[in-house]
Image (spheres, rainbow, N blue to C red):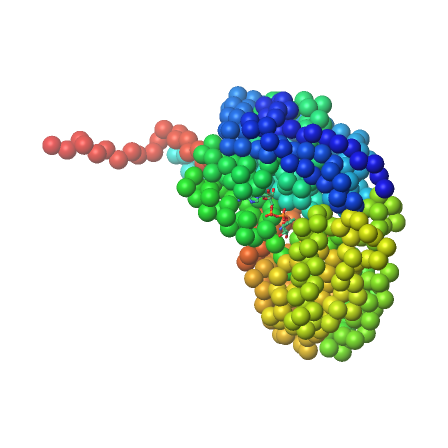
Length: 494
Ligand code: NAD
């Protein structure tokens, strides 16, 4: 087992690491053994106040005034430095999340890519011109908005944080990040990279702490104009209520209960690889996971058997072992929550065919066997609620229409995956699915230019490419008179 580093993390406000105003702290843990890795400050309203003042000052006097090309250069440098420190960052991420090191390395690469992508976009962001006649020149520019609160979950911390930080800064805003309380480590390491890249003080700030306290204070603060949130749907609802009286602009990336639909004419070998990967990678703690696999009746038994043969061979173990495919879940509380869903699944009549509990040879840490249920039915809790763990349930369908109905019969609508060689059918089904993102004959492969986000209770708005810029900028339309237009003359009468 990897040795423990005890770290006392601090907030990062106006270019300095600072303690919380109340000096209170709480522990964060190593999921592989639940030993304390370190402590983070329990952020207060006062800490939030200081961060908002710093971010507003930096917005007005530093960041939004810097030439775009210079902003972009700093972001390119951050990209380069993340890649340079890739091994350290991946190590920390695995230590704090329990996600296998072979997978956190990819996430760190993506974190770096986020900065490169939006550094490029900053330079390319165009305005629009509206040629009229000889009376006016009208044009519209994207202007930065101000201070953003970026509130993130624990499942892939640095990747999701940078997915927000990079476009936010590229567009000329400043920000305060509120990392998830269970996984604060990598955010503080990012600060050192930001400093080395020459980011001015106050442009990027971190306030740690409990969501309902420091997160809520950020959302309610009148000095914060934007809230980009990724997390649970119920938290998103609470945030929208809390920010209503200060009219925040929101981006909401929320939960999912995503189907993979496997038709009998699919390439079953490829479908199998993808379904397994999307259910059990990132320890199943993945918003885009295909946690329900809908299988056409004709191949149902065959495909369930194929799944079983692979799931039982998934390598579970020390997340630092390069061969490990499934590591420990993030926290004991989360393990309990996932286990509760498994027990409910059994009680409601789904058939547990593999896993369902702690593996025998792991006495400590939050290890849970890869779990496979068969014969799930619409209405069962495990077929409609997000479990966010390594639990997959198979469901049977007879025809296209039934596959669509089962898929849509949940409150969520984040992603779906369709497996068939009939491309016409695939597109027909895709158009009827109520969700934000669909892959045909593929696992989740992200192109950073495409709109990312969910429908129904899975989110509001889209991020990615120009969609991120739409969120992080305000269109400002400038109408320039060429002096020839007629102005109404009120008040000239007798
Ligand atoms: P969570 O909602 O419990 O917490 C997310 C963040 O919100 C944390 O930083 C937390 O401290 C903060 N928070 C909690 N209450 C708050 C409040 N009242 N005001 C302000 N901030 C508050 O989510 P989680 O358990 O950390 O993450 C898992 C969830 O995230 C799952 O539902 C998953 O689907 C979702 N997720 C979605 C996406 C996506 O892109 N759609 C990506 C990853 C994770």
